[in-house]
Image 1 (cartoon, rainbow, N blue to C red):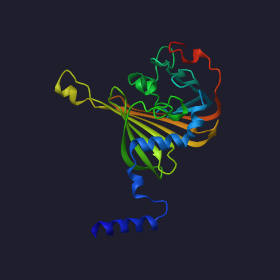
Image 2 (tube, helix red, strand yellow):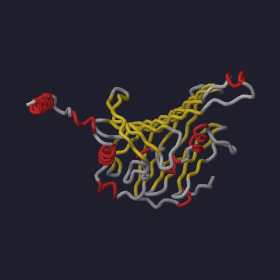
Image 3 (cartoon, rainbow, N blue to C red):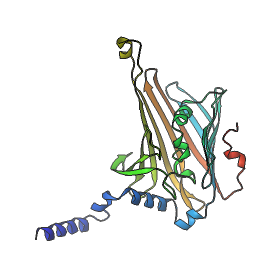
Image 4 (spheres, rainbow, N blue to C red):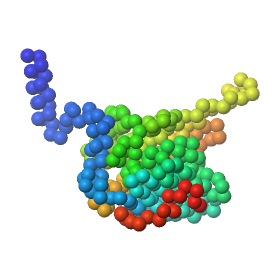
Length: 280
């Protein structure tokens, strides 16, 4: 009788709360990914896209320095290669390039042989480009696209900007020291956020007193995806942001890249030089 009562109670709760499911909160990681893939487009629509290009504007705010720059962004990808590049107006920050040519990742220089803080972080964790986390589903090589590239785990539900999101943990194939969390809108299963966190240990001085003055370095990078709309039969974000924050011994650096993606093209004849990793 106890089991019958519980069953009736659950049935009453579900019947009295349309659209609310006790089991919805217990989806497996693989089920969340499958629903996310379907949120992008039907399987036949996704398979019909052999490559894609997105072009737009970028505004970079150097929050800790209180200045900014502007420019353009281009994202290009096919089923195994990806490219994310920016051209910028700042005299000491002219470009960004993140490329995977199908074999190896590449991070370009921001200016005169020097990488940006974002470039340095990605260079130290190049699997972010190789496994195509950076840029999310804007790339056809997306880590949670047709074939999941790393290890995923279900980390429950968390409220982000006032809405409930499923949270997935992500680990690269070879492991790493960056904690990655992916967020998906609970109602639509659209990918809305990726968080990367890394803590570097404090340095060791020549004496205990010197060591006590050192502090650990904390990196946090957040990608945000919004304004999901139809493009080429797929539902893709047209608003994309990267927020970079590092704090530690040398102080705090905070930068935000805001992208307004204005044009999408699919199944084009992509220039092979786009994916040449050593190209300038």
